[in-house]
Length: 314
Image (cartoon, rainbow, N blue to C red):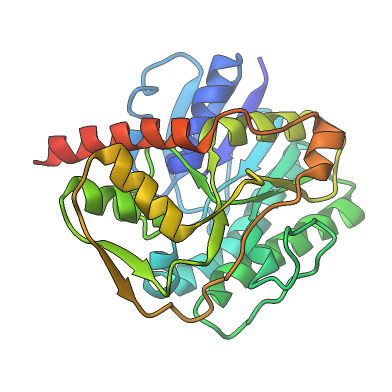
């Protein structure tokens, strides 16, 4: 039975990875300090054979008894709301957390997969963004704490590969959505869905013409599994290349929720990227991967999950 450690395993994406690898026959060790993750995300797994949750901050030394085959490093606050709320924690988990996760992989001779992000491209001058694009990042801007934390994480991962001959993988994750996202996540879809379901006005920043691409979490997990089990060590974009404006997304959410909420416009936050769209040629060619779930189908599932949780809150 392969043994897989997932840092940030009680987070949105991390919990779906716990589901996937446990179902695939792995023993799964989920490590999370619950700063932005939730024990509720993995409550359905607790007590199942092969699953174990460990409350731990990965910016501190990570000690795991016994063999480990894979280390998937997904620990980090990732919401734009966190960039102002938790800037030092983001930098620490990008630096110390990645260092400690790599140290665990080195000690166990395990394969290491780093969750990087499309944010390493900053506010891009190239669209779509290929992995060869080096980005345009403002290191002293509000978003810089996340952008630079992930860029450092990529750099130290490659250093461990070159110096210690560690087997490493780097995924650059583009906008991903799905069940278990935080209701107050701060990103476009959770904001729109929560506001629409509560009958509140939907907040559009700027004029809504900025674009994003939305990938469903099940497609991301499929791409991550393919990458982990491949021999591809260079960064790989995983995301949906279908580009859509945020104004279009707001209108889709209104349609799917049946909400009569109005749209209100607010100033664009500093450093907010104007475009975001992955070039997935490398994923198609090297992993045989492409998204399969349409944006609309994924939105329907996610909104149903949001509706259920909001009703439970009352």
